[in-house]
Image (cartoon, rainbow, N blue to C red; front, top):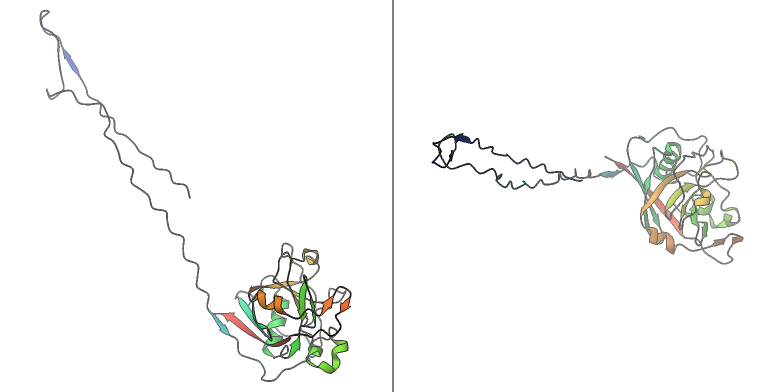
Amino acid sequence: MSRRTLITAAVLLGTTLAACAPAATAPVTTTPAGTAPASTTPAPVTPVPVSPTPAAPAPVLSFQAMPELTQAPVRSFSSAPAQIIDANKRYRAVLKTSQGDVTLDLYPKVAPVAVNNFVFLALNHFYDGTRFHRVIDGFMAQGGDPLSADPAQQDRWGTGGPGYQFSAELVSGVRFDKAGVLGMARSQSLDSQGSQFFITVAPADFLSGNYTVFGQVIGGQDVLNRLQRNYTGSGPIAGAGADTLLGVQILQEQ
């Protein structure tokens, strides 16, 4: 912030009175008090340094784990969940994977339906034991299919959901322009979102405006980089494994 210091110099004006003496006498100049003439040079003024106003400290965020809704995994529901989050609060999700933890900052004001859905499923242990069934190098890691918890159904991984679907929330200015962006997976229909999600491992801006953005990685991007790459643009990689999502912990701002 720029500062402007104004310095005002007081100019002392001496008033001289001239008195006329007899012609043979040189004129004498006096001040009103009869003393030596006052100096008209202003006294130097030393500017007082102004300290910048310190910025207000950022508020310290405090998060607490939300209580679980069930003790065992629930993999299917008859309808979309009721509202269980407060869109005015902040939420984080800690993905506990077989490679380590990934922490996400969720966006309830950008995509309240998607965040509410994700939080609801996580608190019902829906994601426990599922796998990152589609991980493409230089693109993204996808998970959230309940079928991927069963190795016997591997041929169907990527086709499962929670038993209901809901619409995409496309918000202008929220983009897949960097690594770590959390989005909702879907089929061709904008109304086909369910439980599957993906996280970019590199910028994928061509997805912007077409898929819901509902969070961002704030810790553990290196964990995503270690996930087993098991897919390409052409299809699955033969013999490649799939890392496990052991569970999801939801934290709410207090």
